[in-house]
Image (cartoon, rainbow, N blue to C red; front, side, top):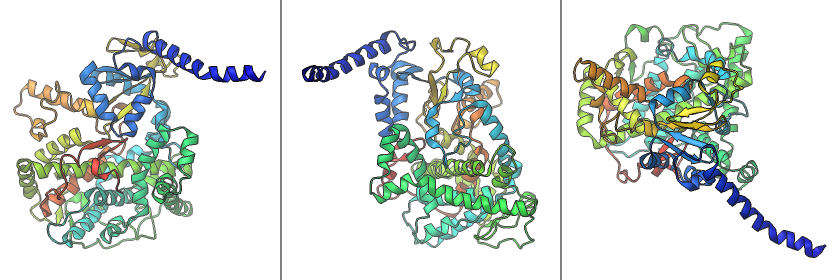
Length: 543
């Protein structure tokens, strides 16, 4: 009996190898996806693409596959990537998300990004969508201008030619703005940055996407072990979800208590803040000139609608659900803004011709460096708009693969059933139900058929040369291929706020300061690395 047991044990490795080989042969030659081009090792195991995820190279790796194999590639046994505008319309109009997004749960609850079913997301979106309309965001300009003023004042106090970490600065600026927009709360992250103090919420917000990527790449038991490693920095990363949850829960409870006490609490009449960076005197600004509440209070202003008040009034969200939703919005709107704006300035340090054109337009629209033009004025600035579009094309902060699942015939959505009765026809390849499929902005934005000289930063490509129909078609093709905030019905709800912040901060900086690259900031250090969001290579070991 003992001898037989030893023989069985010694045969186990052989059996495992045989099983792997048999499975690999099936995946390569008989699996429904076997006809889709791609490297053979990607077809037999997910380990290959996972290693590129952990090395922060997924975007570039998939893009290289497109260059080699064409617009449809198999990147894992059950995962297919594509680069095609027409196909993206089918996939991103009604398909549900993959389980990957569950690694980004906040406070162990769903939010808009992690709600997989399309129908459930539509219900959730209705709760927050009115907050991000241009008309409502226009009322929040004083909050954005106040934070911008603090940033400008902070930079003015620095000695000339001071090198600074713009990723950290802009993350704190964006966090202050998002907190003000979400619950009218003055966080003061910019002030903490001024005295070289790390704001714990700012660090947690930056760590959270890294936490999600790591969680998605390792088994649950391995993640639990990682969180027990006695390393302070690693433990902060693991606790980033809890840190955010505690802060935002406190803010939501404050507002909820006030709403329970009195349905509508109107802010007291106050004198507008007089600060160095004054708000514009346009009608939309003057309507909402009262500042945020003090740091130890929150209120719901009758003239403003903060995100928290809309979520708490939704019959589809509990208080815990509102907390998780706001956590998702804070994460989505903070590092992404910081990363894109930092890259915008980096590009301007290399392209003095673009800087000159942009600054000429800004100076004309903003004769007083201390007066922020109304957002309606900024939205009409032709070269600024072209610069923002080109910046988001090349330096969009979320260029990664957006995974969806080919639905089964039992899908509750009849329109999906009609499109995918037997699977998805993806550019001539049949993808069976359950296949994970997706495209990425990184590749869509670098398609030379749509964007000639795709690696060249050229804002002029977004400006019509004439009124011809051909020129209109060219601009339409580029616009339709842009997806820096996602694609289809699951596009980022905070898109309008993000673009508003980028415009205001960019014109404020360029109107008040010269920009130049610090020593050591070069092509190598600014090489874009991909988590769910991108970041420069130099930031990988920093906060």
